[in-house]
Image (cartoon, rainbow, N blue to C red):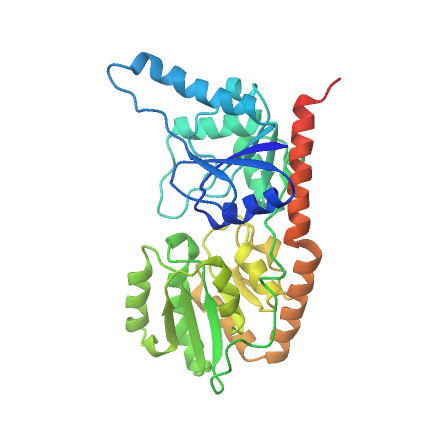
Length: 365
């Protein structure tokens, strides 16, 4: 099967998905706006020479011709994140297109205005005319169905999984430093991920559990602001700032954490929650978007209202003060991931879903 993936080839998700598909014998070609490399696959940077006074009449036609060629060359064209690629209903009718919104293409992040009406209309048209629409989980599927006014039952659930060999709890790689308790955050410092709410929760946590330390991993536009808040609230000594880490390094940190905090303002899924659970680390997360699909409240972690530092602090304190509860939730989390989100089984489902989409379009009557 020949698959052409349109998306951000720099994203950790595509960096994981593509090699997994290749291992299953899928011929994968990646088209991206940004320069990137993925081992074992051809990555093509999509570009049509920009319009000018001399080529304005032909530019749009050449753009559409380019997209038509992709539709005809591949069994399935899979668009990850509904960027403005230019796939019209007429172009999609040339072959089999699978559309997979990721989140911010459907629900704008906090602080960002609504996209231009023309772009919204194009995204709705893509979802309505695609051979298949997939989403990470059921909660986001409902959001997508409402956004495009399509039947939710037609949306295929195609979640991200966890590499259970990479995210595998073992004896601690790093020895305990006396009686310190470690809380981890690794979503990055963008407003959507809610790091500032964790900073505002820290003073209450430190007051009750003075032996706590917070590992804050990532970079982003809110990093300086969060460091300022640490100074303002007098918790600098309790915070360890770590630059953004390669995905393969994350288990080394999770292995030393007592819990993970995901205070997102909006979230389409919750891959970080699953990775934490796979390492038997309980999760405190916002009860928003797709996070309830990946964090079972009271079983694998605790859910709190978004943008609520007091409730966030209470949940963190509850887990830090109860090692037996942490152990029980961690064990339940690992069991849940093994049962529902094994990456190898998920990749098999991806391949089967591509076959289903292809057969839906090209089936011989």
